Length: 382
Image (cartoon, rainbow, N blue to C red; front, side):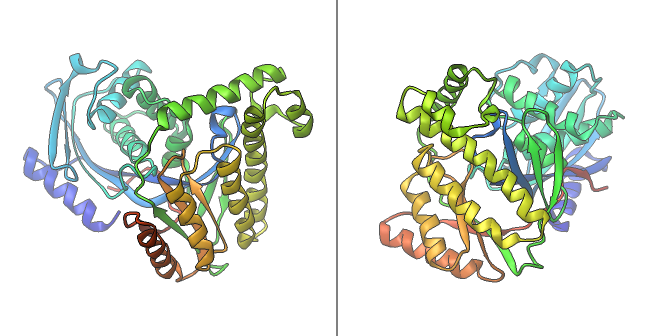
């Protein structure tokens, strides 16, 4: 997000609606530092918010309808109360679904006009949809004078995505977009919803985080995600526990399970939870560079035990480490998407170029990378 984005949406709102907006709000995308496929196992995750955001201007209206204009998509959509039916399709469903979720929760939500822009990459697994939802929740809550706590705002945004849009996501994306603080990662307990801000002083350690989108289409995500989740839930049933976060003796648990595939899935979840806890410890003690072996181990676990990486992602991780990254891993649900790498400060361009060269040699398309800056959550800007 930049000052230009704020000015852009404010000007566009005035030009389109003939009045000034009542405020400007923004909410970020996120990247998950560590903790993959632990969320639906009641485990732990550690995302941080990105500086890339949805920036939104809004103002109330009194005719019983809503309009939303995306400067990014160069499109305007409108809807009325009669349209607030789960299953709506199109990008505007993430806005309409927030209105629906707020109303379902008993909050009186009046009509409004919204104009937005976004620099969160779409389709890269960086939660562009959660950023849109959380910016909309923030704007509508303030326009209607609602005192809604940050965690509840995240829960309302997730309800929009789960029940209105129909995407079976956990709470991590919306919690990160709402709760994160600058220069911190967010430790989040997916069972209790307890959270802790964990200082991530990259500059003091002479490090930065490169996020690189492999631009690999997410193939088989829905079916494979469901298969992984079903395997974890069946393992929990066989072990007599509520969720895999309750495993206390991994070797004993593995000995009770009937097949090797299920054992691998369980081993990933249990060891990944342990890596999240270890990551929190190293960050809190200021040993930022010690994240590197945890990132490497996480990737190996996702590749070999959970089997959710693809050749482009593996090549990106391997190339990053060969080019000087301290450690690297896939981030996100898998079968494509992004990697993140812990790299010496100032080395991201060189490492990105090395990955791009390896991709070209392998016949893959060009990836796109950027330095990720741990940033704050949703906020009102004016």
